[in-house]
Amino acid sequence: MKRFLYFILSAFVLVSCAREWEPEVALPEEGLVERTWTVAMSDGTRATLDDNLRPVWEAGEELSVYDHITGTGRIFKVVSVDGNQATISGQISEGGDTPFDAIYPAKSAGEWSSDGTNTLKLPEVQSIPAGRNICPDVLVSTAHSDSPDGVVAFHNISSLLKVQVGRDDIADISIDLKGSSNSVSSYKAAAASGTLAKGTYFIAVDPGTYSGGVTVVCSDGFGMEYHKSSTNALVAAAGGIKNLGTVSDGAPWRYYKVVGDSVTYDTATALLTATGMIEPSALSSYSLLLSIFLPSRNGPVDAISYSYRSADPQGNPVELSAVIYVPQPVLNKKKDLSGIAIANHGTIASNAECPTERAQYEGALAFKNYAVVMSDYYGFGISKVHPQAYLDAETTARGSIDAYLAALQLLEDRDIENEGTLYSVGYSQGGFNSMANLKYVSEHKELGMTFDKVMCGGSPFDVELTWDLYLNGEYRNAIGFVPMTLVSMNESQKLNIPYSHLFKDPLLSNWEAWILSKEKTLTELNVLLDTNDLADVLAAEMVGKTGQYYDTVIGTARRYSLNSGWTSLPDSKTSIVLYHSSEDDTVPFENLKAMTDYLDANNVEYDATSGADGGHVDACINFILNLLTKW
Image 1 (tube, rainbow, N blue to C red):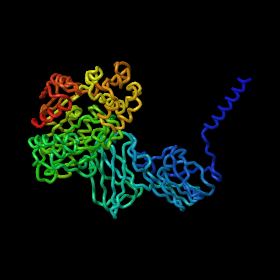
Image 2: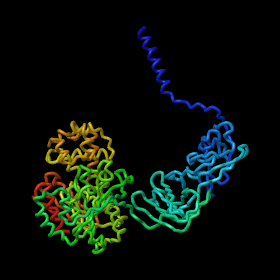
Image 3: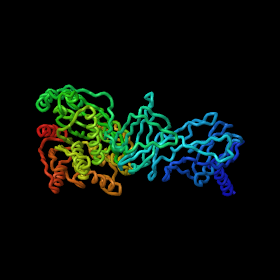
Image 4: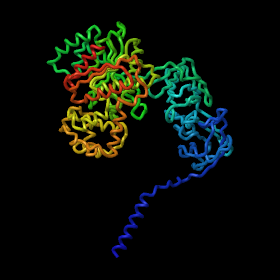
């Protein structure tokens, strides 16, 4: 009996849940009647243009019919299409269809008024699907008839601008139309995915006379833009098509946006003091050193922060940030620029340490009359909401090169030309990224870039080798590098490895707060980890080098490494200078041999220097001296 009651109760619960989960069915409103009309597209109304530039309606699409009784728009659907006529059907209040007022498509319906007139509402971005030449929602038409009994004709009310795209890398087209009172009406058409194929496209605009002319900007989505403009008045007639011709051959311009006010450093000592890396007791020694290598006649130096466009690890457009240090005499047109250095900062874990947030010692190279470009890297600065792409050579190099290209535009807009040398320099991760920059430009000849000199110090060129040596326990200094690398790989590369297969507690419970948040410095992370043994931090399979997740990690490390996989060798005009202390306690010295072996195997010339110059931090001083003497 109990069992029988249990089944009865279970059935009751299931029926109750089924009723609760059953989707609600919309009941017809009181007073609504079903209406079906035949309508005509007298001059076309849809986003598929035929050979005669006439749009075509499609069955299943929606339009809005004004209900004069309730003062609202009613959704009607296209039931069928036959030539230039279509059958539409829907529900409306009894008597609400007289007079008949409608707009097609329904997405373009703006505010209906009491007399049935409707404002045009074009989408903010006109998304053009692959294989189409116009957004499906912009060829807007309206119909009005005192009596709905006859065939009602729809007429276009939007205006089309016809443009020709002669490139295959354009992602979007922006159009600004200026009115008589300097008011600007802006429109944007973009590829639904990827870029627009070469060909003819149509962009819908509000009808009217734009006496101030038109400006068109074609963008590739990654920062390169092509600008064309005309001050001639443009008349956009309702239902008409205005041909603007080819718009992708305008003046090329690289996107950048200055962020905040520039910071001035009167002397190199003042700049180094602002980094917070120099003890006050050592300032006098540094000042003497700097007076020898960095002449004060090239100061003061301004630091200008800016944002620019680059790519994320998946190749999608992303906004990044950087800083450029420029001598004031150059900015004031009193001196020509000697060259530009792409300086790549070392490993950081906290966003507060990135170049747009804090002065960088590499900026002092500007006192040699150079402009010094320093990217924050992906995941820092303006892109801090993203995980950093630590040791991801491709992403970081592209970010640095794009920062340089945007900096060239920034300088050009200030009438500063660079006819001097181009360097790529950095220490530690910065040295790794300096070599990554060389790899990137050697594989992207279309950039037309050649480095005169690439200078790398204490660099983890072989990521797999470095990982193995850390796991073997040979390096116990700053082991926070390892979990930071794992979080970066897993998040930025979307490896989707469960963190229980990477870490053990307490890191397992705190990796987001300690690492992903970028609120802790590497020093603070090492204190929180409170160990010099990776076995206390990593999951057993990572320490034991076993399992599918370990294979995924090591495969990523192998792909990151710079001592293999180049598809094009560096330009022979580039001088490569390498340095590594044999006593380095953070980045294994074996990385220097891994890199020189690769260069030797490919007959690439270089200048390598090593010595017992102390640990990683102490050896950085020797790298800087080496850099300055070989500048």
